[in-house]
Image 1 (cartoon, rainbow, N blue to C red):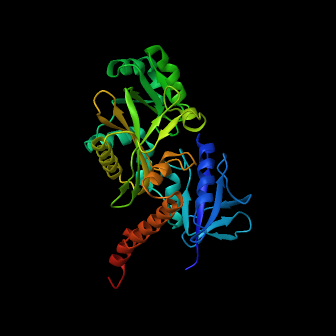
Image 2: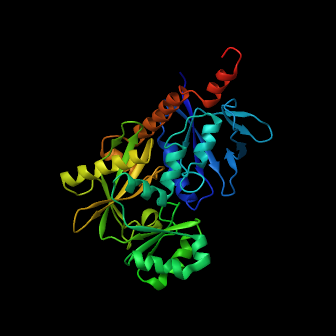
Image 3: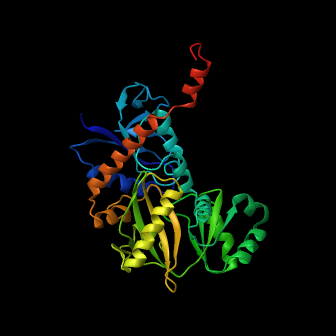
Length: 357
């Protein structure tokens, strides 16, 4: 067999466009050239798909087997898609649905798990239902704010204690996040969050360390050694993640053996509870006074930059960056082969109504 053509898709229309570019560069540099033929696929801020400056489209028919060059209809074959997209239209199940319709395997979580993981509101509800501890939170919609801002703020005052964190419900990289210390700051924080999404999450602030685990696999996932984020700024915002060189990423995290294994177990359970496959980074809080573990977020397309925690935690666990990418592509093709063995509703219905049936 020849090398697999791996289309690394990056850019996109979300607020995390620049982060996606950084992730893609690292992935393209590290792919094993003996096994894979990398194809950069850049999505502009306006949503146009491009390859080497040519505009392409992703057909919704498996017959194409890849991308079509706009105008000439030349086919660019693709064996596997590797989405390096963060945020809206990349991490939320939308592009995963397009890959499904195109009939081509893709790395990472499927449509459902991607959509769930992107929505912090739904994620927390499902984690709570699965018996996993989460930070107390409240969801506020844009409609609520427009109709009765005072009532929305009063509900936060009643149910949570300051400080709180206000976030867009479906965005990552700490874009649009505000730490709020008093009720009078809530309107501006909600306005900021609702610039990026139709609903916002208001979370109870906790005095905790930020501990993360990388998870890898389909049915029987592996969990890396935990890492700890020690932000130079007051909290781990966008600047602290990508721009501030004073932020420290400690891998492995300086925690005891028992706590380490408890966090790894919680990360695995969270991964399975959301139906994840391929990869995810599970972010937890470790309360300073009690050592209580709380699940914060599950990121189904974690950062893949040179300084990102997901690959760093795997490297500390004995899996190199290049080997990690290879394993993710293998997991994508394994899941695709498994799903292709399933009967479709259409095929079963056709059998029932055919003369021979």
